[in-house]
Length: 310
Image 1 (cartoon, one colour):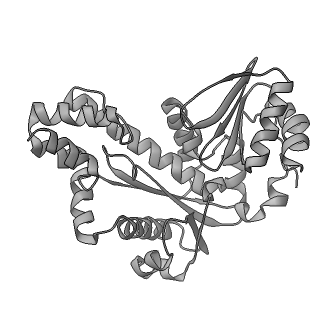
Image 2: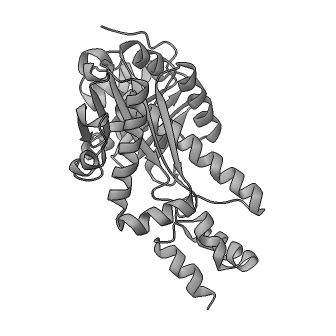
Image 3: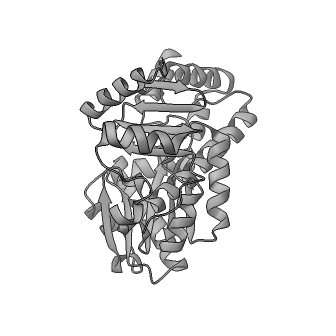
């Protein structure tokens, strides 16, 4: 089945290193303007069309006006060597079968919570999410876009869940489990159980691969143990997992915004020098006891910040 892509504004697909260079050559030949951006191998722009090749993957994200023509007449024939755009149900029919998708946000960020979310799709819901532009949250740079897509997901009224583990509780759980993968497995299992309560006839659950799937299986309760549990790399290409990633990201950025307003500063993401500077500012103003309330204290950043004050 071929679907209409007339409203598509973003397209993402993985690339091999060789395909990255083919794409660079094609863009150069078409006189795209290149510019450096963090976390990308390169980005290029022509008129209102933007092409970004991210280091992680690598993968290409195409956005803007003229996207369909670029994919049909340049990306697929000159770089990918195959026609997939508009044939999702042919090439990946499993995306349209009933299943849960689970993903998380915040695990690599010093400040803020760990958020684990889940969403259910069947064929109709997957098509609705696809047509709304749902994709992996990591390919979306705009907080407004994240919130708009999260609103679109909620409008589908599909089964969904968001588990926000604030820093204080996160630090307690990390001390209990002693390992991030075990904590993640516990959170993924709770999300699956919540979804099973809403959609008890769902046959399987899919998440990105972060550890041996036996960790999640052991953490599942009675409802979840009847599911087929799958983990795979780049699972965010699945609509249910992508929806979960957006719901998780929305909850994460909302928490950071509210915490920033409470403490009177912008709370940055990641674990950069800017993050350390913000942490030192907070600790200087409010004392070291503030850190477990806003940050993940097993990060080496915590020791560096507190050590700086000694």
